[in-house]
Image (cartoon, rainbow, N blue to C red; front, side, top):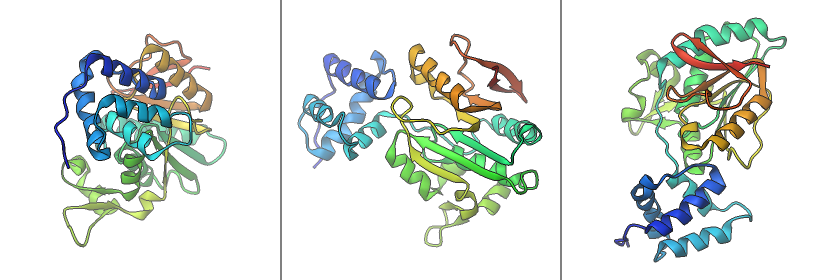
Length: 281
């Protein structure tokens, strides 16, 4: 039964904000108290827990042990999952028309690994995979892999399903819809990603600050993620990227993100109106 629960107090917010920061690096600012309160209410109702502190104590009891389903659900409700296919089209134009060609010329062996580092429900990762398939003649004989990770287990599960409709597919070009999707027989408004696209993408859960990164990466997409971290965690994240990226390589950030105030070895490069960072080592 759904119950009416009051918003959390400032003290309760601080405790949850600190817990989220310690576990994920996400910096919940004071102005987010209503947002966080409303999101956590979903878990209180689902578990029939009476108050925020009871739930907080419950989460703390799970911390440090084997990762639990409830912690996964908690991280899901406090995370932001806004995404879409081909979001910021110029990024994908730069990827297809410049980055791919440069890597094909520069690499000594025929393997390309791309990391969609905060993939949410999969739109970004599948967009990258479609770009690869569009250039299949360029990559003839190559081993291609898109590694797609997110801290939220529910969105990873949804991404693996690859089912989209409504606003989620608005930016997919019609020829891509016809080539790389098929319609659900029972509900024609739902488009399902074809197997040839899915085969290129490997989804898994990853916490930037507690799990090992994939290695030997040529291109990283980590867009609109760093804005949720403070400077210390931004530097840790970028340092981690530098350790696993090949040279040459390409790091795509969000259009509102920059490494200007971060100590890193990456160098800025503008490609087709798209802000990209490349190894400087």
